[in-house]
Length: 352
Ligand code: ZN
Image 1 (cartoon, protein in one colour):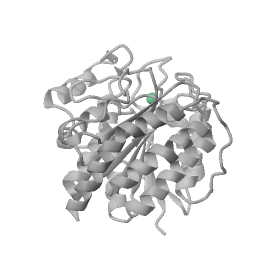
Image 2 (image 1 turned 90 degrees about the horizontal axis):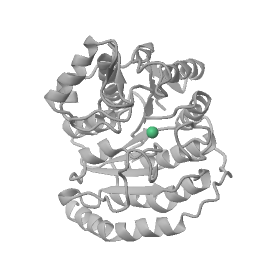
Image 3 (image 1 turned 30 degrees about the vertical axis):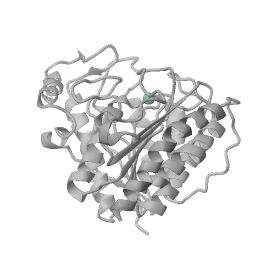
Image 4 (image 1 turned 120 degrees about the vertical axis):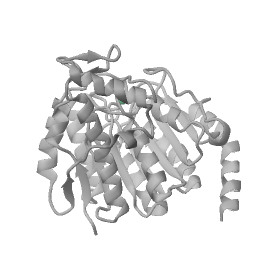
């Protein structure tokens, strides 16, 4: 069995949004330690490469890429209130996107069974023409476009479990039925998008699924959403690839958000997506680091996910519950999606 890949590199320390910023280089420092500890038979390090301007251009305008490039002339440049760059940020963001593309190619070619890109800055808030929420380039969206262009992928699932809604990713594929965007996030919360009613438009109608959760949800609530919404809808879609925007800010110790997920919860969510990938996409699944701002929680949660990916642990059934009632919310999401899923199976029948 091929090993799992971890894309990581000390160069990811070089993007520096300044002292006291939660998205600090320290996040990568603890993950470099972890990768060193876990590296072995089942988990191998894969070095990143830089994305080309053309690859970034599949999701961002030339003018926007020029703007980000121009920030490398200043020690510190504030793109907005919380998205701040240093001289090396443009280069680091190219390496983050390229690192993910390298991972997708390595998995496509069977060199690795699956993988996790432990890169920064994160990407899922980045819009075509606008940086926001610590994000410069939308790495997962660039990854999906890469799979479409180079491998002819027609059904790509992007699962986004970061505690914030991935508005940039949703926006990139809002009218595109070849990418199913599924998000669990705290709501109402930054960035304000991600309501149940945002379900895609035109050809893409029904291929955006938002599960806006109240704060306080723990492992049990997240797993209930996975069992009743994520896995059934994703299975109906029959994804050829599974991409995961894996943020660890739903963790109970995270300083920015109000969820109560534990390491075991993340392990169980990863296990359920790994199983989905086995069933539909030949095991092809590529995780990408988004948020996660408590260093210890980040390190131990990524460890659990990596060990689950490498088949080294069967994560025990989580017992932590947030005690939040989400049954009505789940029913509402399913009701809205029901009509679309019928359309989904009709179009699938015409494909075969
Ligand atoms: Zn986040």
